[in-house]
Length: 129
Image (cartoon, rainbow, N blue to C red; front, side):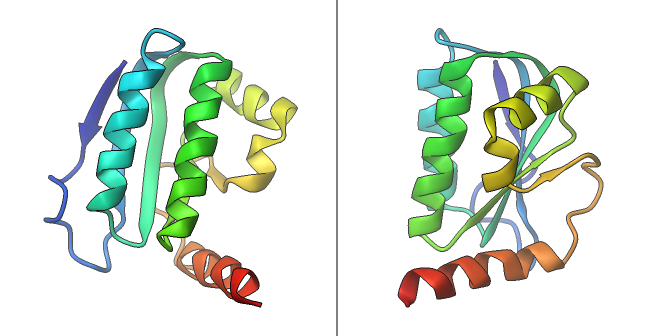
């Protein structure tokens, strides 16, 4: 498992999403390190964290648990997490587990639509009520 930040934490402008490119296998052996890296990234993220899954070759339940945990922590901090460019096996996994309903999943990693910036505000508004 490899994590490559598009920009070093804190250097992206406030209007640019923080993008993290994941590659390799996300499994029980790598999920702990991934969790630590993503939680650290959250501390320096803009209000949108994009996880590019285009190079992920395998993901097990522990990898999905990392994504769920990061999403929960991100919500508390007012950050939206978006998954992009999953390979076909990953798309099926997200669909079968229902994770695709709670996390926005985009098939293309080239551009995150501006509407997702409002996705965070809508969720935050519901939490405050």
